[in-house]
Image (tube, rainbow, N blue to C red; front, side, top):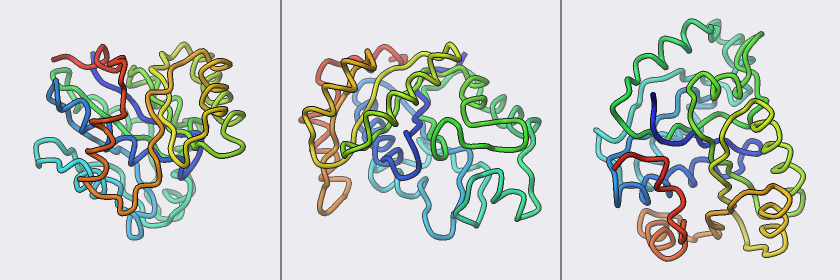
Length: 222
């Protein structure tokens, strides 16, 4: 059985990568942890694995770099089809089985939970296969309440455990309260616009603001 969290988003650009880096910085204080992004599109423009490596100052042992890497910045199913490299369910199963059961993982998804991987599999199916609890990355701005509650409902309707939410953007107390109240979940922090966004600025925010209740610790083996 895997330990750790799957980081999904309410949609593309909701802050999954920065949230994943923050989670790496946080968990490293009490447990060994590894990061993996199994599927990434638009790899020539944005390398999320490289971003997490830099922002969380990860060692080589803390990063699993292998995965499906596609050039076009499109949904995985379309990027794979156009590249002539379809993502089969067998390939996904093989990647999952290679993880073993001895490590803590922060696994970052691609887009949101209903993003298609192939003709029969969505990101939420992949999460279900891995069996990890889910941390949802959401924006703080207008529209986030609807997007976040829909994501939480989709996860729970599949019987998946929701660990909570991490928000990104200008702090918005009312949106945070609405997500916690109507979504019946915890918001573990609001990552502000950090300028510059570096290991130092993110690490400082993590130390001062992230998961003050220490509620995420239960998902990782010390």
